[in-house]
Amino acid sequence: MDPSVPPSGTGCADCDAADPQGWWFHLRRCAECGHIGCCDSSPGQHASGHAAASGHRLARSFEPGEEWFWDYGEEVLYESGPALAAPEHRPLTQAVPGPAGRVPEDWTQHLHQ
View 1 (tube, rainbow, N blue to C red):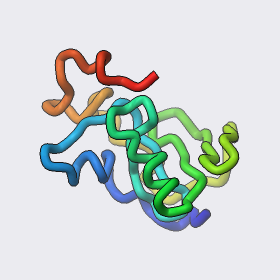
View 2 (view 1 turned 30 degrees about the vertical axis):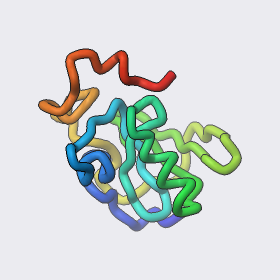
View 3 (view 1 turned 60 degrees about the vertical axis):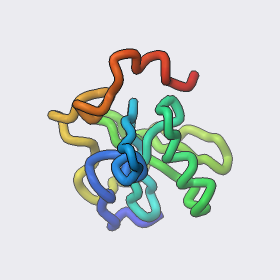
View 4 (view 1 turned 120 degrees about the vertical axis):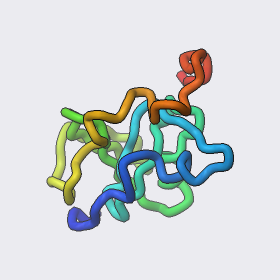
């Protein structure tokens, strides 16, 4: 874990880089490198994909008001942990799901359970 590393951006880096661009339900932040990925309910499941590909096991929620960490290796939830470099969550103006303009009308049909 490296608490000094800032987040990679304000949204899922992989959804933003895709062609066509994707969308997400909730966001997770890698506690080691700051990579922002979408949660496992999202169509892309990029946060867990990042953990598997990089070996970076710990992620923190990147949602406002949430301070929990998830250990992808041990599949353990930690209610809190060390403070990470700012910003600690997505912009409050960012839609959920998001980003605005990329979420299909039938978005609930695309979520993973």
